[in-house]
Image 1 (spheres, one colour):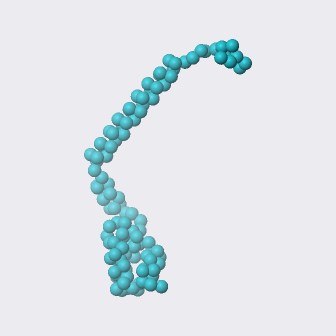
Image 2: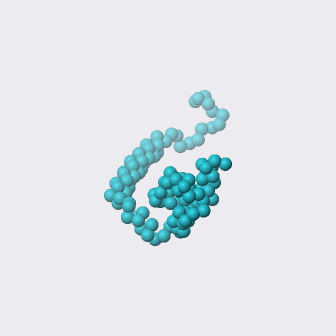
Image 3: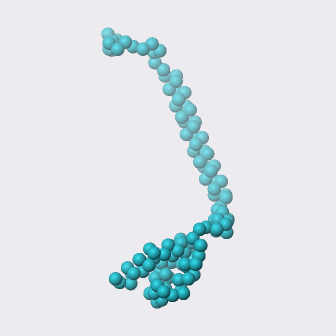
Length: 115
């Protein structure tokens, strides 16, 4: 087994590495370089394996802090306008359908083309 395949299986066995990549702390390249230099059994991996995998309150508040409320409000306003237009169009369509009603008495089944 070559080194790349060994690193892939090592990464599959340790999902903490994926979490550190998703959080932006490191990259696959840096992890592979650590693996290439130190292998699997070294203290270099302690920083990645000793972290909690569940999100804590600080990470949630950081996410909320990074939200741009002005852009959220703009998107909400745009969605409200679009829904208003759709509602207006469907309201006009249903009122025009109601005015185009045909005869109120049903035709006999055996009568075709005004026979």
